[in-house]
Amino acid sequence: MTSPNREQIVAALDSVIDPVDGKSITAKDMVQGIDINNEVVNVMIAVDPKRGPALEDLRQAAEKAVASVNGVTTARVALTAERPTAASQSAAHQPAAERPAQPGQRPQGAGQKPLELPSVRSIITVASGKGGVGKSTTSVNLALSLVAKGLKVGLLDADIYGPSLPRMMGLREAKPVPSSEHQGKMIPPSAFGIRIMSIGFMVDEEQPVIWRGPMAMGALEQLLRDTDWGDLDVLVVDMPPGTGDIQLSMAQRVPVTGAVIVSTPQDIALLDAKKGLNMFRKVNVPVFGLIENMSYYKCPECGHVDHVFDHGGARKAADELGVPFLGEIPLDLKIRLGADEGTPIVHTEADGEHAKAYGAIAGKIAAAIEERVGPAEAPKKKGLFPKISFK
Image 1 (tube, rainbow, N blue to C red):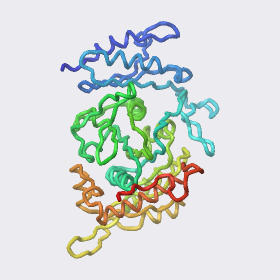
Image 2 (cartoon, rainbow, N blue to C red):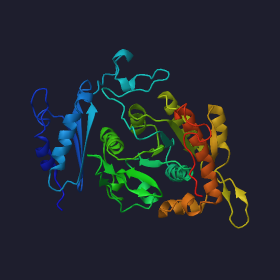
Image 3 (cartoon, rainbow, N blue to C red):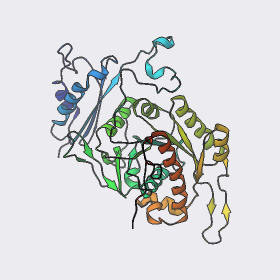
Image 4 (tube, helix red, strand yellow):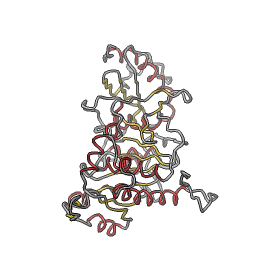
């Protein structure tokens, strides 16, 4: 199949008309960005923030037009709101996304409404202040641990620039397929009883994603909105490192139940973890606690424990910041190999020491979720998430 080119996409978008004045969105220079990756096309359309919520029909029309181009298998169109840039704006005239959040409120993007995910009972983000701390490995094994406790779990790869879940879940060749029950939605690949969605299913593993922030955020929103998640108790979101556009977009647009912060014991990692934690606090997302990954190394031969990256820093940081310390995960070659080979340690050694460590942390997270979203009428003995009986 021949890949589409930019001229074909622009020609298709020229047929999309703004209902206010009857002019083409290309004639009005509303097309802010076009990214073509083989058969996958992403388009960003700039709109007046006041009109944003009313332009869903226009977005869908643009998406349909792009999808009709020969060679396009996946079309994604996202709207981005124009924002004033004058540095002298007062707080009263700032865009909503830039105003300080009031206690108990989430900041909202200009002209944007929160995404509705009615079939998803709760959403937790697994985040870190910096890369390289094992956040994705932690996300995968926590998701499997929640499944082992009887929960219906989904897993979203929110790291648009560095997606890793297709490899970690053994799904490198998998692709989403159209849903027969919900028009316009895709059924995501599944592994280990978990539905998984990632931009990595749509781009080559070695192909860089070179997008500006608005396009990356638009792609993330579409992954959330256009995925047929089914009925989930928990959607685990593997966040990118840092405190940038993706994190802010999640806080603005997604009803996050709580955040989990992953760090290693060294001071520099903990400093960045504190920044990540404080970012979630500023946007009024509850922080369920800190996890210390690569906490220690235990020799498999003699049992000697060595604290390669120091030890206990995350527990101390949690105490200082007034959040729960969720637990320690050791530095172990088997955990790393399981992630690289698509066979998570919680699956391959379900009764092992490492699976028990992840399971204990998952139990605390499940309890925190139940405390926040559990209905008052839920039976107390079973709780929100009853365990599955295998008798």
